[in-house]
Length: 558
Ligand code: GLC
Ligand code: CA
Image 1 (cartoon, rainbow, N blue to C red):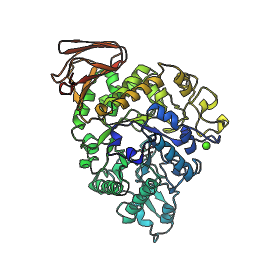
Image 2: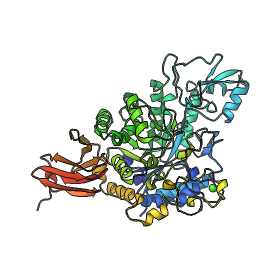
Image 3: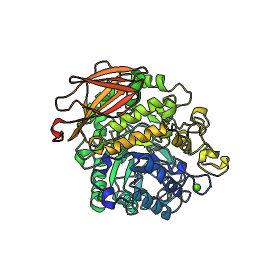
Image 4: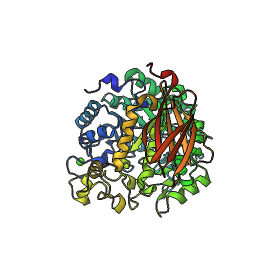
């Protein structure tokens, strides 16, 4: 039976589903022109449903010159023809909804492409109404405290434009002029941009580059109060006109600045957890998972009841190391990145599997971790099969290569000649299609794809406990094991994760509120016994376990 609109838009739906980020361009090419397209995504919806995905986040599919892979929009109200038509989008949304999968778009509000008619008019004519849609300067010296986002490519946030006879401001690439939010028409236009796609069935947005919309002299021009006001207005519009739709923020900031985007439940339902993400990896680096407990203890209490963190391991950008100390960054580079050319913008442009040296147990461990925490996990396409990357491609393109569907030509992504592919296929042997692809992994029980799919199934069949907002970290001394409880009304879930490259043993005292007869939901290479009121587990290298305990008051009456 297909889910109804009210199932899909039930309040808090996002708390129990797994999200899957995908670039339309690289997912599946339905018409053999070498470029992934919307109809291609539609063809692969059964794959996503079988994987257990409850929502997909599509990277920008609007008309764009693709100088920043669609984050440089030149027409907000059309599908890029290389991806298909508005009808293709409608078919994708319909097909997804029929399978219980919501569809998020990417709302890029900070900037547009310099090719956009708004900017073209503004630069040519000082009296154009569009002139005030951008930020101009005669000196290019204002807002000097605003951080450069792409220091490897840009040296200033101001670029001189001959036609305009002035400098214009851009927080990202020079071909992405920032919009001026002090102009009310910009405000209104961006709300219409959101409305337009919500009216076509989208279930919400990942909001791009959230902190930077407003600029004020003397500040770092990030996370200003006006920014919060804008997104609260957007959310209020969505709640009123498209109830049950959701927003997730990309705000790569310090802990307090990031937490602020929940704003008592009035702003974003989800915020991508940039402060936690590097700590998941670092725990493998130094086998000290306390850092994960520390960041969760610092960030979970601030989350309002109907909101949740959005956890991710990798995405379409470099792995950002903005939010860690210099020592931690050094540890990260030492442990995960010895490859020349992998560093970019203070981070690492590599995928999950190469970072973890192709070790499936580590991939499963970290995936199970983000699935086990209170909030919403976001998977990045291809990480479920252990796909690799290409450091020979420029910028972040190497982590956006075609999805590997089979070991056949072009990894089954497209029937076009290889030289016509929108991006080349991964060739690095352990991560290339011959070694890593959906068709083969689908046929091999025990493959990474099977293991990831199993995790999602278990999570979905225990939605009450995984969807609970409650979390209690367990003190395990110097152990390389991370332990936590997820209490819910009837059960307590115990999660144990061994970050060490060798087996580890832990003893967890059981709280008096549980019956000491656990149900192992899943364990990888672990064994356990209960002695009195102690739960003793032995976990394999990089092994983990999810164990369910019935709480005493929920014990069925005989
Ligand atoms: C966000 C996107 C990134 C893009 C940038 C500018 O950080 O994730 O891919 O380049 O915004 O739009
Ligand atoms: Ca195509």
